[in-house]
Image 1: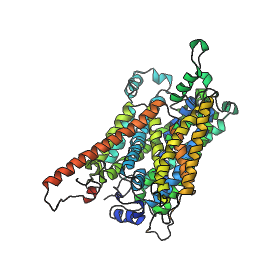
Image 2: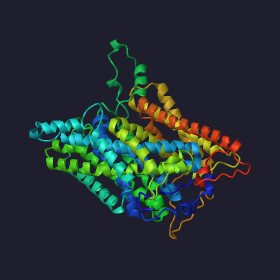
Image 3: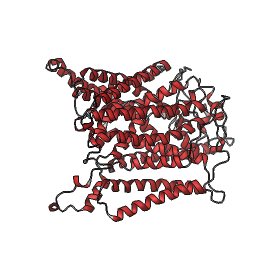
Image 4: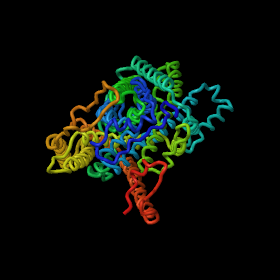
Length: 607
């Protein structure tokens, strides 16, 4: 089997409780398959390389122009706080479960298979969805770059032919098709994504973003930062005055309240929901932890370092772009190159444009690489068909890569970036919430006389957090909110805090939350601080950001999760029918033989 990031990991699939699993068990199952060769620097490069991409090259300009104005840096900072809160939870669970699967594995070990399916569906949005979005972003940038050529070239026949080929209209982007197809073909050919190549491109990526941030900060003007929060955007959504029609149109305040509740406009907090897309990728460190040297020590450190680097780059870049160009003139697809041209620095624009086109493809490759691994784990658990677990002689997941790659290519080619951002962001927010919850379930337990108290309180806390998010959004959006809405907001927020405090005070900590062992003698398991306060805070922020979505975005994410659950329950029904059929035709000793007995562990028993 080949080593490197392309090697096939082995899933940690357990049927017992949380306390029955350990790092030692994970390593026992993976030592025969994986070569632990990734250092701390390698893990950081993967995390940064998979995270820094369209967040800087597209979203900063888009959010500044349409949602937050000069306050775009606040949007990134709010999203960064949510990402860091969840990142600390990932840091602990990544050390406890150094295996492929990320949130899917954590949810399965703490909440069961049904919750794991939801996490897996959301991770699919992260891996396949974000790879498609980055590929589409790259294709849009190629078109944008070609449109900046000199007038002499524009007037030529070959230029017009080229523009028809790369921008035929109808929402189709051939360049996105090419880059996504190329990434899939590289993985299908069994290319070993070497550490040196990934580290090199990640270093180039960070260097480019550092140049963009530094140059834009040098060119920033204070007048471009005023007003810091434009009145047409506000903190959470567009203010009432921008929607209320003259009284002759008979639009009362109740109608406006309902309209803003369902269809909020821009806003700094709304921008934070969109900007969360830029933090997608750091948890990919958990997906390759099966190949990490001393994962108990290095995985948590890599996650924390990645989040610090990424958040710092995002905030500096957003301040620089908003200060360099008035937010009304910032491009929604090519913010920094067009911004440098706006200020007359064409050489900086060319460096930025060429750099973006050079580094975004590696983000596509690294991101889509995780999807076949997730599918492989879910197939071993019996959640997905066995075709996703097929491994060729070279250790590559060719079947799983073909299926995931085909879906990515189609989405990248025909779906614009603007339609992907919110769906992907909300999906990963749900996955992060489940990870935060998993830490609480690992570290806390119900009182002996109330065996399900912790689970019930957590469910109530999540519901109240989402409800409080909707109500707080209304209060921040509308200056003249009625007393009833204010009272409901205060009541819901107070109940949320009280439930969280009850979890902290009435649910005792486990004396031994996880039996774990490491092959490295000096390894110390990283523990998330301030449990359960910090994970509960992460859950609240994540759900609050989800509540900022328009009704169409909410319907899209909950519809996606609902379809995933329906398919899962249908699969369980078919498995029970299949198991019952074999129970009637097989010998009494049930002498079934299978080439992969570990995949039979999750099959339901015949009734």
